[in-house]
Image 1 (cartoon, rainbow, N blue to C red):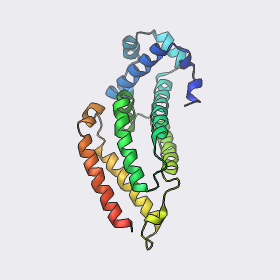
Image 2: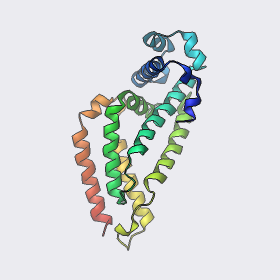
Image 3: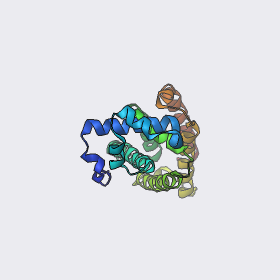
Image 4: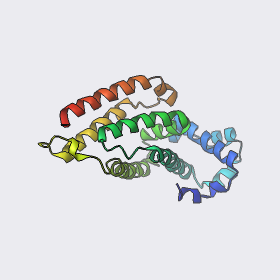
Length: 211
């Protein structure tokens, strides 16, 4: 986040900047990269086209900045609240899942944009989004697995493969709930189901792999 804050957009007055970023993320989330016109953004954000392109040279520059900014905002809050004292990896992952649900309510427009970017296939931005997402995912996995209690696992199992299965299972569940065009207001209606189902998976994994 510190590196992003060096961007010249942060010289703009706070309320105007926040309004611009929120409007831009909302437009991209609902319409996708290609169908979002910068004229729509500047009209709703009430700034000039010249000012927009003063801060962001192209629509692509704006989109990539928004993607990095949105993820950085979420992860800064996420890592600030993670209970790393919890050494049980299954319990840690459950708490992370619940925290993510809480943050969707705190940052609805940001999560809507990030969710839409997950499905974005436009060649203008796809490769950069994919590269950033892959690097972020690898970094997150290292942090998630830091200092977990390996003594909880059954001794006759390959611990690394067991951990892989746990990560793939819970990540796969989360990805299976994501649908193109679905917004946070839609996901929020299903929070109770998500929690119930993630608990079912965690209980199955605990039974299968824990002592």
